[in-house]
Structure formats: structure tokens, C-alpha cells
Image 1 (tube, helix red, strand yellow):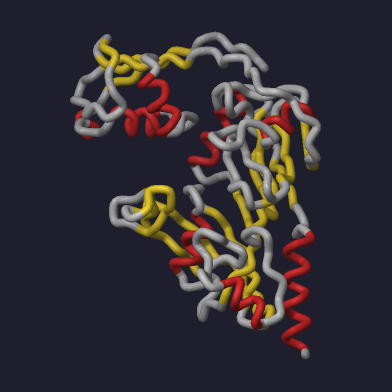
Image 2 (cartoon, helix red, strand yellow):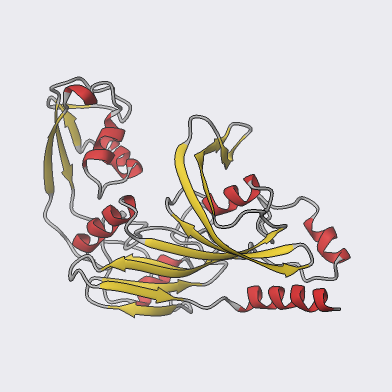
Length: 320
């Protein structure tokens, strides 16, 4: 784990920025810092407004001077574990890995180990520390039961640049997913506001006061039996975004126990189709500019076996 010197930044609030929340302001002014990371820095006393330690929700005034310090990363105490993991690409600054379904990205309540981070500590020679002790190297996440390509930063300089590129939407991410039903118009851009479901705070849904979320369904293949295979481009990266947008369009992801069809097991049994053990969603393609060399990089990952088995079963049934 690299130990960087403490980084200090100073900002001043312009008249047209007055009234903004402190954490929102910092996330906008420092594109390599997410809003959640900014809020954490504020709560830990690393941000001062006019020399005072304040709260993330503080409304700013024109002329306020902010001082933000990014402390050096804390060496992780997480254990390196020899878990199966395909490293698609690695250099001195970053890696691209193919995360298997069923693997949590980083330690969290209920998942103290056997995560992607534990595997990364074993397979890679170094990880950035910006994500904190529990999330070294993690630039973006995939849900536990979503498989496929992920970017990993091996030093803090690369991490900051990759985070800024994701926020600027210059990291291009494609997925493939099997959904119930079909769309009448494809390609199709889905843009709305996503936020926590007011009826269940553990879920996400379309809400008026949510965060802008953008998904483009690039192509659709009807695979029979009332199912479609979509290629999806993720323009923003909100939690559960593709799964929520699929449900919003009336085409929930097959195998999704949270946002999918409530009677899916019975319906699949009636169709004599296998019931997937997880949502059939896979990150298939990454295109981005190397954060240090500037080289254009592209990586692809084939569909995993469980998705190909289900797709073939749909096609076989459609022919009989």
C-alpha cells in the first residue's frame, strides 16, 4: 500500500455557488472526490470553512474559503486471500479484473472477508489507498451478483484520474443482461432521477429528488420464450442502476431477487427453464484512456456459463 504525503487544497465559494451544501460543492470542485468521500473527509475533520470544522450539509456563503486536506492512506489490515480471480490486464498503475458472480466488492457488514478486495491483495502487487482501509484500489463497484469487468487503481495518482474520468463519463462501460419481455424501440436512452425508495430505504427507485441516471439500451435480441438479451451502455453509475431501469421499463432482469418478477420461480418452472442463481447481468466491455500514459485501452469479457446456459435454453425451447 502506497503512503502518500498529505494533500491540501483550497477553494473559494463564488456568488453563484452560494447556498450549496458543502459536500456537494467539494464533489463538484474536486472531480476526483465523490460526494460520499467528501462527506467522510468533512466528518473526520479534514475540511474547514473559515477555519472551522463543520458538517457535510452546511450551506455555503459567497466568499467562504474552504481548506481540504486529504490524509495519507491508512495501510490496510485486510487479509490477502488466494481466491479465484481472472486478472485481464495489469501494469504499474492499474488493473482490469473479471469479477465472478457471488463475490462482494469490498468488506461490509455480513461480508468481512472473501471479497474482491481480499482477492486483489493476493493477486496484485499494489493498490491505491484513496478508497480507505476497507476499499483499497476500488474505483467503481459491481453488485455482489453482477459479474464482469472492473477497473482497479494501483496507486493514488491513477485512482484520482480514473475517478475523475468516470465522473466525466469518459470511461465507457457496456453490459449484457437477459430481461423479461422486450422493448418496442431500440436503441433507447433512459434518463431519470434515481434515489432510495421511500417505502424501503434498502432499495432504489425513480424519484423526483433523486440523482440523474442515464442508461442506453444499445441493442436487443429476442431469444424466445418472452425474453430478450440486451446490450446496455452505462452513462452514469448509480447503485443498482441497470436493474432499476430495467424494471422501470417493464423488463426486469432475469434472476433478480430484489427488482425482478415476484413469481419468477413459478413462471420459469412453467416454461421448463432453469432458474438462475443470480441476476443475469454481466459487465462485458470497458473502454478508457490510461490515466498516466494517455493510451486508449479496450477490454472485453465473454458471457459467463450461467448466462449462456439460460440463453441457449430459451433458444432451444423457442425452436421446439
